[in-house]
Image 1: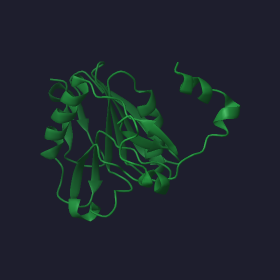
Image 2 (image 1 turned 180 degrees about the vertical axis):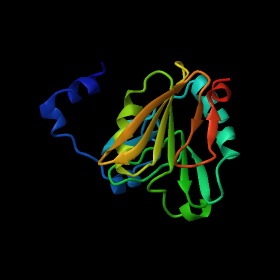
Image 3 (image 1 turned 30 degrees about the vertical axis):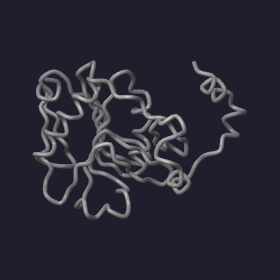
Image 4 (image 1 turned 90 degrees about the vertical axis):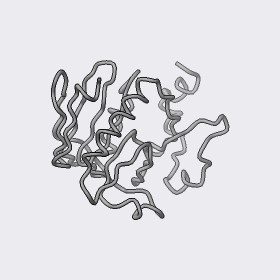
Length: 190
């Protein structure tokens, strides 16, 4: 455990941590002093993890697969921010309603589908499920790359998803929020 993690595990210290608003976060530099990329989750600025070759490979493959399936009137984003009330995550992929030109002056505030790819740990990605549910994201997939499985969260309500299922083996991911978006796991994990 790092020194920062240790100090944040102390309840008295955690209670005194200053949270960052989305507006304050927008005034920060894109990269921190060490050149690290960050995202805002529940008012906390979190350094993004570096991407392994497996993560990058799956992200590229999934982007190509989805690009062909996204219906007209929707935009496929890759590592672009979504702006919520207290968070600004940058999911690996997201499908939002609207054309790209609608997001020149603002980031989308919800999505039809958000996808995170987890290689070493899915802890933060699972925590983000409630962030996405509060923002009304209709469907959320966590790709568990090394396990060759996908957690599928659906039906957001009152800050959580009512439905959770797991796809593995020769299953086909079917996005309930975007009919026609079907991704065979065999192609995803090829």
